[in-house]
Image (cartoon, rainbow, N blue to C red; front, side, top):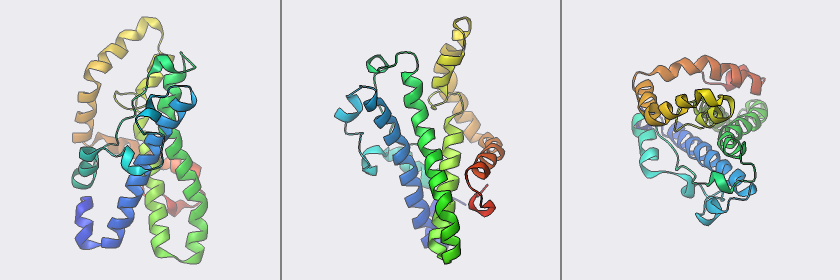
Length: 210
């Protein structure tokens, strides 16, 4: 079921899902900007990205596609690797900040899930389950080592110089490979991994939607 269909079938779930998506994406991008800023690159701050205002972190087309097609993206954070205090690991730290934020959010939401169930607050329980599931999947998906995903930054660290041609190849064709994987719904192969990560982050089995 596409997200927009929930407006007709279950407006409350649509509203909760929309909030969860917007916050998960916005805080993911905020973490990128914050870590770059903490490493001395003032470009994200100059562009207004070191803020918790979700509007600053949403890409109009990417946000619309999430609700229409079930797949989209936030507004990428621009930063200068040469301006970071750590020349070797700085860019990877900025890249990992986004998935790291999503895992932290899932963990914190997992802590709140038990009390929400005990209080029998249906709307809060639904929201937390959606929020946990979205954040875990965003983290796992973004760690796939394909440009423009965050995981591609790790290749520059772990690949030896003799294998740098792999990076050049992925920089050129990674986006097309990623689109093909999404169209072919190969991203469902990540569900078992996401489920395992989710189970590790929360002790409540029904908190994960995988």
